[in-house]
Length: 199
Image (cartoon, rainbow, N blue to C red):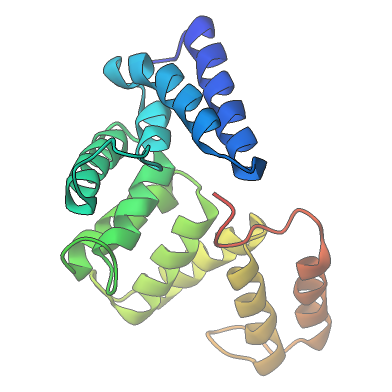
């Protein structure tokens, strides 16, 4: 269901408050403002608002870290189940080895795949690697390379390195081609390169 103009305006105000909090000596005011703006949007089950609300806790808002994490992942699950790609990617991370939820390789791969299918570059990268190695889903090297290439075309840093190396070394079905290796490696210097932490 599309978001209304008024809800979108409120969501953008919440994002602005969160951005201000990043650079403020005292972040609590900006985060309190963001929480107040996000609360009615979360109640309306707007996925992006759920995801953003789950990204921070206010002082004394939860009795324990465990309480916060339980609430947080309930919201992220709701956003992911509604099709929000960043929430799907976050669940892929959370169920991966060393994630915040109980390690489950197949569940991690499932959420990464949904994120990838929506065109999220980090999701494409992780899904491609999972397919390449048969991690959490059947091994399919050709499809894995397809998703890694998509991530590279979406300017994801890790995928750009991978494709450049594959052309340089003639690996993964790529013919050795120094010119194409240079072409992909030069893209790493562009300002719009997407890093793992750019979410």
